[in-house]
Image (cartoon, rainbow, N blue to C red; front, side, top):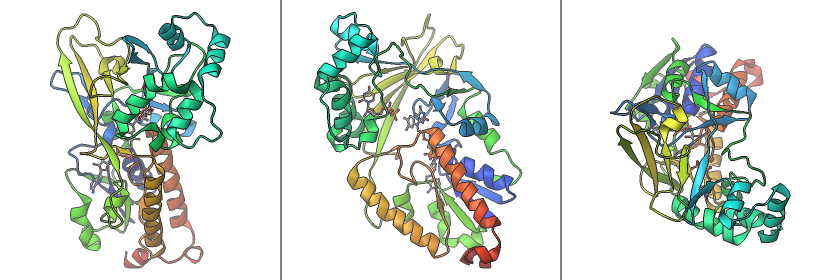
Length: 387
Ligand code: FAD
Ligand code: UDP
């Protein structure tokens, strides 16, 4: 069977590989001029490896996803650390023992920090919004120092207008662990993400067309020569936004390079700025990649409503609209079109990279099982009769 895969990010590339390995011919199209989607990295004009769309750190608790990607890359061991610039000091985020002791001039042990948090937190019966999550764990003052301003900048909304899952990404700790992630597997692809994607997509049954927008191809699917579609672009766009636009949040990235440095400029990979500047955070890539270089390259992230859709916005009303689009997708599948919607934009999920790979592997397992089933066990699909 011939598949058209829209998008060469983690969702599209994983599906392409799985389908090609199962003996199908796959044509991957992406409207950008490169593969790897938002994980794309490249040498900047100074020769420093940078992530064009902001810092990407791989982390997962899934052995399956880690083993799968390890077929296409070796890893550089790396554990991300982040400091937040608060009250004129740089302190660890997630909030931990060091954060509390530094901010308040205390010397609490773990039990002392737990008692401190117990005193300041505002217990909530139900954790519906991100505000509930933060107030319930650290109370109002720490919420205002670390979360409210950052969130307003990042999402253009108050914490109370976002689903609980957004702030729940950031834990609170009473110990000294200052790692951003605690997953079993964490690291950076040893030669970078784009090199990983080159290997992932390197298969005789996969062909790739860049600078190619699926919307220009969709009119004429049979003539274009595909039987089935895997779609990893925005789901509302697939349906011409007939039910209205799903909101996505965007970022403007400001990259800069500083030549001839004696030492790296930031103390850790990323410094967050919850309450100052127009940007949320700054990242220095050589911390992440370990690259040797005489200069250093950094990126600042300025959130905006305009531009590429980077983040689905987790909120009840958006989820409701997404569900309507999802129902349209299911109706289309039942009508025989059988499009696979997979990835952060197509599933409108605030997914990390590993979750996208897991979703893509799962979707392909189901699809391949369906295709392998005897005909009597599956409804005859229109495109199978056409093909
Ligand atoms: P994408 O990577 O967005 O790929 C979709 C592709 O489809 C795009 O290349 C797009 O051009 C293409 N496309 C869309 N519509 C069309 C069309 N009509 N025709 C042709 N092509 C089309 N995750 C982590 O695990 N760790 C991190 O540290 C991390 N940091 C992040 C930092 C930032 C700033 C951002 C924005 C995301 C971060 N993520 C991180 C999330 C990660 O980027 C995503 O989970 C992952 O890249 C999503 O993969 P995807 O294939 O679903 O989507
Ligand atoms: N967040 C915050 N302050 C911080 C870090 C995170 O308020 O210093 C909140 C904010 O709403 C952010 C969310 O937690 O959007 C998730 O943070 P994460 O670092 O996971 O965001 P991402 O890397 O996906 O942009």
